[in-house]
Every structure is written in structure tokens, then in C-alpha cells.
Length: 206
Image 1 (cartoon, one colour):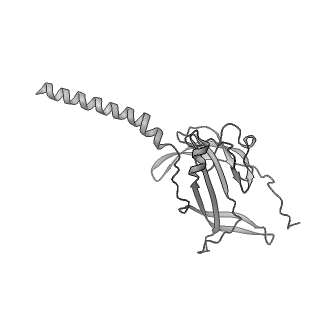
Image 2 (cartoon, helix red, strand yellow):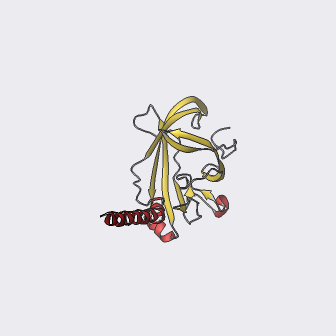
Image 3 (tube, rainbow, N blue to C red):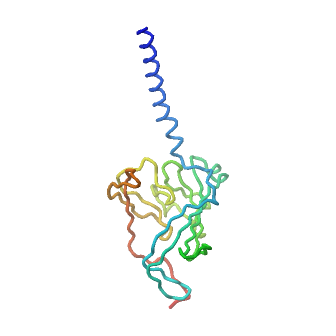
């Protein structure tokens, strides 16, 4: 009887070991790939308060404005498959509205974005058609290791990354600044600071 239980335990140990290897080398690599079945109609929603907002139509500023940002993102499956090489092509648009506006009317100009990137590492690719508001994203803008702003890389490390800034149209440093806890879950905290820069001119204002 003891021999039988010993054989059963050996079998179970081998099975668990095989499952562990399967999870590490098969399940995990599959799960950390950015999906292509995103529903563009289901936005991610964030809210907050902006200290100062410029109203370009009137040339005035508003202080402490409560806003709601809705990010609509969907994958172009055909373009992703045509690009090959584990490439994902995402179309994304952010709609920013006043928190007091129940209709969700855009408060700031919308700028459609189209990104191509490695679905595992998030590193951007200069695929034809990638653009922000119609401005093409070129290889010179993203370099070799700039990550797509909609998805931080899986397997994130305690280091500085280059994340694409859609206003600057180039990568900007995102630095690891420490560890934190969100809803009881330990997380890494990153911070991106971009110095004030001139990104455009409103022809309607002096």
C-alpha cells in the first residue's frame, strides 16, 4: 500500500512540474501578448482636475476644470496580420469632456491616433499608415526602443523607458521612481516629466 501511495505522489509531483513548465513557457507568453479583439465601442474612462485649460476659441483660460477622458481603442486586425512579426496596429481616439456635461461633448480637439507596435514588448514600429492626427510616425521619431503610449510593456523593470508623446511626436523618458500599493496590490510607480515646449501656433490668436 505504501508503495502505491509513493507511486501516486511521484506521479502527481511529475504532473505538477510539467504543468509549471507549461504555464511558464506556453500560457504566460500567450497571455502577455496585446489582444486584437478590442471593442472600439467600449472606452476606458478616467477623470480628474486640470489646473489650467486654454480655450483657443476665445483666447481665455479656465482654472481647476473637472474633466472626464474617454479613450476609444480598437485593433485593425487585417493591418496587423499584413504587417506580420507579432505586430499590432491600434486605432485610438480620446474624447475629453467637462465633468458637468452629461452629453459628453468634446471639450478639447480630438486627434485620432494609429500606432503599430510589437504586441509583447510594446516597442513601436514605423509601419505605413501609423500617424497622430494625420502626421505620419516615422522611424526617426521613435528610434529603436520607444514604447507605444497605450500599453506599458509586460515584464516591466525598475528602469527608465522611452514612451511616445503624441504632442512632441517623439519618445520622452518615463522613469521608475519607486514602489507603491493600489487597492492592496503592489505596483511599480513611474513618472514622466516633459519640460514646457512649443508644439504649435494658433493662427487665430495674436
